[in-house]
Length: 284
Image (tube, rainbow, N blue to C red):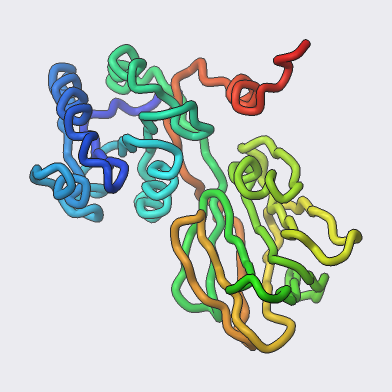
């Protein structure tokens, strides 16, 4: 089935980078010449002294979002826009990214594809977290539970579908998506998982026991974690937002049925990117 024609683009720029104004004006000019309407996010607009629209209204009015920056900007855009389920195109302004599909010099040749539907949309599983069933928060890569300071280990008790499963002693625990398997998860010894799989990844951080190993579960499970002793736990959401888990509180984490929808060109190849990023096969 052919993808929808995209006519209105909502643009989000990497924060604290006013130098992106020149590129944005070039992008805007190109998009206008192709018949697109371009709406700039108000925070991005303020950064480069232009007019913009608040993010919620921008999401309602656009057909797709364009993230200009890097993977971090795209992740933030996916989290903020999750409830709107808008497809997102990532334009990378730096090194090759796992998520941002296009390098800036590829945009002029790809942008017309959005008009004729010649693009792919991939669905990346996201996590929903709640502390004591309060307000939800969402993660594209991972939710990390870690000690609030460096002086002692943290003790975490984990439950799978309400059943007590394990106690983790160490620096913390990563609950990651397949998309996030190449982020902190891989640094902590977790597996690389194909990003369109439906799995929950549990990876201990510097576990005190050698028997504590990374675990890959089906995405249908509910993970709950609580502190095993008095103290506090720092919760880090996609490396961009922090929350605190207190003793006797519980965080629940589930996979969302709807994920982040990322726009790719039809020739996008995950394994090629993986090979380039990790230099696999370079010495053969």
